[in-house]
Image (cartoon, rainbow, N blue to C red; front, side):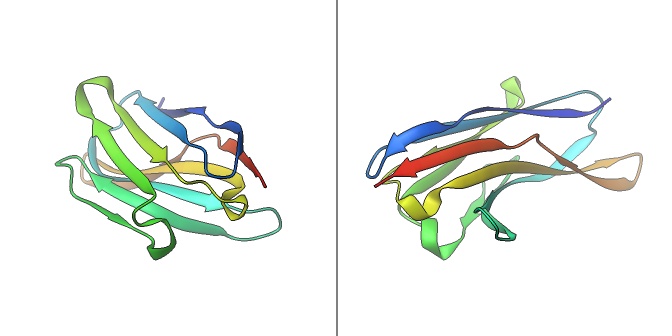
Length: 119
């Protein structure tokens, strides 16, 4: 059974930093990419960043220069380093993995991690 387990998050003051982790396990197949999404209270889930297993990455405009996505393939883990946090960054962060197993593409979500940024 494939699992994406998230850790990190918590409460931080504006201007502070947090690091989120997303570790996958199980027969996930060949990973195409892993994303991070942000869901603010009462809002839709928005794209934050993406990374491929080769390390190529892209970001939503509003996090460029503040957030960094990275991957540790031997540890099956993707990180989201969040710096210069703003109250608007408050919400639940989800990781999402797109992978191919036996020619079938599947998507998997982590359980979500709460981030609260106080002003």
